[in-house]
Amino acid sequence: MVDDGMENSIEELNSRFPGSSLRFVQGKNGLVCCRISNAFGKANVYLQGAHVVSYCPHGKDEVLWMSPESMFEPGRAIRGGIPICWPWFGPHPGDNRFPQHGFARTCPWAVRAVLDTDHSTELFLGLLDDEHSRRFLDGRFDARYRVSVGSELTVELSVTNTGTDPLRSVGCALHSYFAIGDVTKAYVEGLEDIEFLDKLSGQKVTQSGRIAISDEVDRVYSAAPDPIRLIDNVKERMILVSSQGSQSTVVWNPWIEKSKRMTDFPDDGYQSMTCIETANALKDVRTIQPGDTHVIAQTIRLADLSGYEPGKK
Ligand code: BG6
Image (cartoon, rainbow, N blue to C red):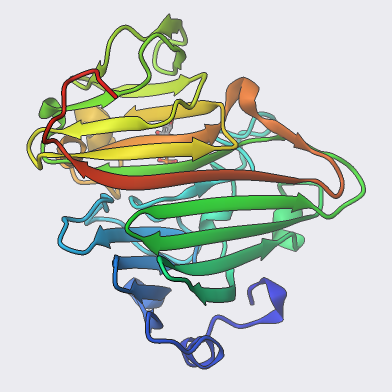
């Protein structure tokens, strides 16, 4: 069962949400997938984890990176696309038996609504607290996720505290994996002069210049400038990432050894991906008071490199 008292059966979903731009199908390993296709592009969203696994504006190459070795197993995180890390980022701060990056990415989400507008198709998913969530988080919540597919992609997580006590230290990451031609010919721009925690050394460092990736990178930057640009000199495009409700950004590339250690990740996968995550991490975790809502969002769009000058917005 998923929350809202509805089964995620494909037949029932297609009859509840008829429409030409969207269809529910059986995805990999039998998991339910929502296929969106409209005048602007295409996207696939798995209900497990409310997980966007593909986004492709018309006439362009795929924007998100997906691991060909992702298992798509019920209850197991999908590797690639946009996992939702919530209600904590990384290891649980108090109990290392709890799953890394929270439970939202492995739960089945309910479909609440679908909306076609002039410039996008919007899918609204929901997750409520239940017995499972209360094993990890002592509180009540209503989490809503909006996936808006147009000439840009927006994912927006809104969490309302429906209980009587504050939800404290709530962490999050919209953990986008971006597809790039060759990591050694790509750069991340926009985070210059910002302090970051290097999770590998435990040191705080200030970013000097744009980020070139030539080794494992696992960093939490203490700001979310708008936009961050992922420059791809092979695909001759840039991916622009804008964040809302966030004051922290994670940049991650596992590089050679960690790629080998991950069972659902190809050994050479690090060459064609990099994550830029809109986060609420470290000091940016949030307290949500009873009745209050916290909204965090990421918008992704493509631009070509014509007229692009390194370091210039
Ligand atoms: C990143 C973290 O956000 O996610 C890394 O900063 C972590 O430390 C990576 O390795 C992947 O996490 P997971 O749980 O999906 O393997």
